[in-house]
Length: 328
Length: 268
Image (cartoon, rainbow over all chains, first blue to last red; front, side, top):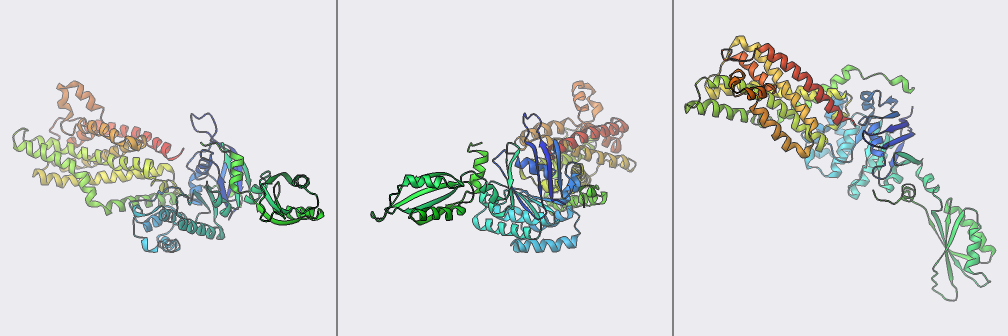
């Protein structure tokens, strides 16, 4: 059974001329970490809202843990947990009670809830602070409490909205470590984020959304590989003295399979007698695969390679390529 | 396992467990701040009782039996206002600002049950506050009008009055956005407070016909009048069964609007 299954899901808010979510489909396997990326207003929050029973779908179907969220929201709620971006902890009761009451809402027996709360407080570095009310907590601490709370009823799918936005680096690393542990334990994680580094680091697969549609969905490496001409290979070549010019060399490189475009870079030469030429190759596949062919090409011409630098596209390049640079 | 194999609805017992857990949470929080709760609910009726029932009477501005008709009215006031405050204020804040309610909305219980818990809890708090007003009245006034034969009607009216307050609170709490909370509450509370017949019996308003019509539109009037029917039947009052009927109808309307409003706030 898939952990999450979305088919032709549509949401149109009343009085809106366009669909906030416009017929998206995807499936998430149990134990997978799925990252949902997109600019503000892309429809990620609405999508997650529908999956977590807080937004009623206009059309299509969404299953979480095999339960149709539209048809049986009450049952779906016991399958999932949500960690929001901003603290929604219960400020009137202590941290520990936040955990035990959450468990009680989900029907976990008292003794079991108490044991689980102690374990989670320990695991999230909050053992000393269980009796404190959340008012006094920093953003990072509140985030940890909310993840611990979400785990109290052992959900099959955990939804995290911008899990580390606004956290200091140490807190961010801590949260990432805990999320990796969860993945190892087989909990399915769905995270929405703007942080491309976070998505590339944590997500098994990434979906990029804009204008309510899913524009791309794949493992991060494939998304980056698929980006036209944004892997680069920078070469430094000993010019030698057998009649070659940078221009003839550029022509030869451009003829190699997989090279989209070649561009000369300003040369710098520590020794005027032995000039270095610098060129940048924009390639469509993986840049590293072109190291050998370029070296062979140079060797055939009696030239030697002095330096190679690979430039891989980042997920951010993919994101910008798909959604554009316009502010919204 | 296929997707269709698990589309069994959540058993009622699980929903009931979630419901009682949420209620337990509310009761725990009230218990942990009991002195604040009592001060909050008792202060206003206490001062009204003291000034109108005791001070003005001692100074000879009101007749001796004024406190007899004021006391049942203040029971009504306490029930309605406490029910309303308990529900409306926190609800506006929870929906609009702290989002604390989200954890309960994501519990495996229907959204209507979350609203029902709010109503039940507010009713319980209002009922407690109203019962506490009885000893307070004895202390402030020396004696209160009391008829054992009126106790069943008194009890029923207390429950209905508390529920009415909760119903009003649910409607207001789901309608108002946090930015407007101050203005809306001052625009609603004060008229409600003074047109609910808690300080005067309704039939005596016949000489001020337009005001009598205004007060007839405030459901709190029927709580005050029913309280008088129970405790001071010698004072002219609206027949209790009419009061009960109006209250039940008002409650039905308020609760259905309130629950609809609650759904609108809880689910997009």
